[in-house]
Image (cartoon, rainbow, N blue to C red):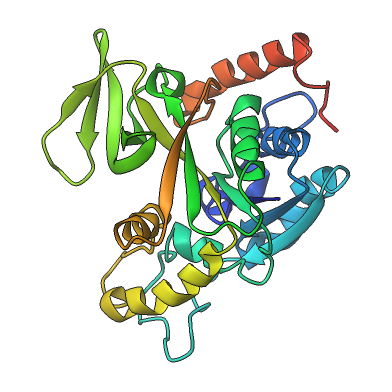
Length: 298
């Protein structure tokens, strides 16, 4: 099974890979911990989806480390990677979104896989849960997807609101995902939907999505089908994005897929705000000191 890492936006957000935040004394990023955790869970290869302009720097700073323990491939998310008959509209600069990022790896994804963000720490249990789910499916399964969700209280920062997908389920399957800005509000968590609808409160154990999805390989054919259809409707809409939660939601409502909601006990780490870094560095060091990670990883 494959680990697919969405990292095309990392260089842009950090002002170049040299400015990415190192999280330990060995120069490792959060992404290094993700690969390490996925490898020991059972995943046997990784596909980094990056911008072609950052390939050399990415390979030298990250690739050369992780290729010591796992097979590595690179896919490039570029604006002009469009199906035949389409071209980039004048003035378009924003990437086409997370579903397009996965589409960019269509020649490299050949097995069931999970996707993660390149700049989040998901924790060992999250990968174990994802691997166990995929490994437990009958060989050749199609459309039996899953989202590994976190307790909201395990995804918060003390330094402000964070964006999360608030999960609603029925009989263990995800029925609705409300993309929201969430923040602590007394003993509850306040969720403000990004579409501007009325805010609501949930308890600390509410499950939220951190963009860790588990997919059967048939998703690649679905993306090839849906991307041209999406482009016909949205290619000239400024800043429009072909997003994986939207694609999965469509497939579920079309009866072509189900989305199992899985929970993890892992605690998320991330540097949403620059003030978050000291706490993240300390938390990782504590995990190393407890023996959950090897000193230096590689």
